[in-house]
Image 1 (cartoon, helix red, strand yellow):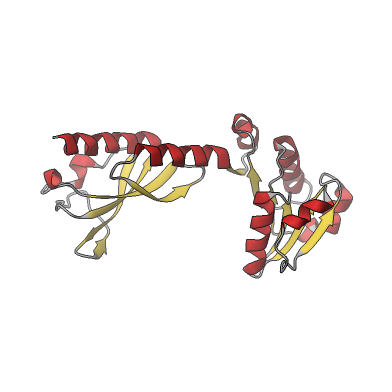
Image 2 (image 1 turned 45 degrees about the horizontal axis):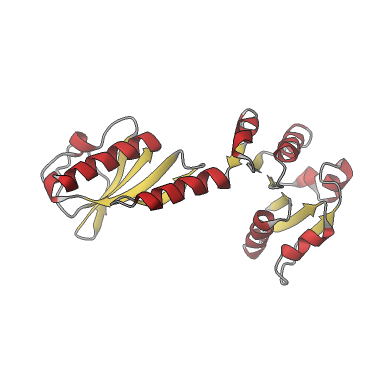
Length: 219
């Protein structure tokens, strides 16, 4: 896969190096030649310094044949223009944009690009860690809008069916593990204390589940 990474700061250099180690053809662009010092010494992809919005630089990077573009500069407007240009001018289908300022996230979402917002995601994770509790995050989709959590069924839920505690529009079971064996859950499955459940949930759904578990512990 031919990937162009625009921006060689902390995120861009880490991304470019990881892609390179996976055997991808990687070209990294940045306005500042010194930014390429962020790349590990054994990086063997291409690096091009210049105005990242320049048509000439993008052509030198091979954007006409690129499979994907990651716009990860610290300037949201630049990232949006790069993504828009790559899509409309050269027809690149796989575009991922870094959202640097949380208040500018709507700018990227308005164009329908895949957006990664480290600040939003990081704040959510820190808040969750500070809150503690029995729920553990095992997977996060997007910027944390939907996540997969793991928790152990408390004794007070023994014998209850999944439909009584989990099935709703914001929190749905993914799997149930019992005695070390995982299964796809059915709505009528009676729970046993000690079962390990994985659920997919929105922030609203997980807050409701966290409240349920908290009330169970207090009771």
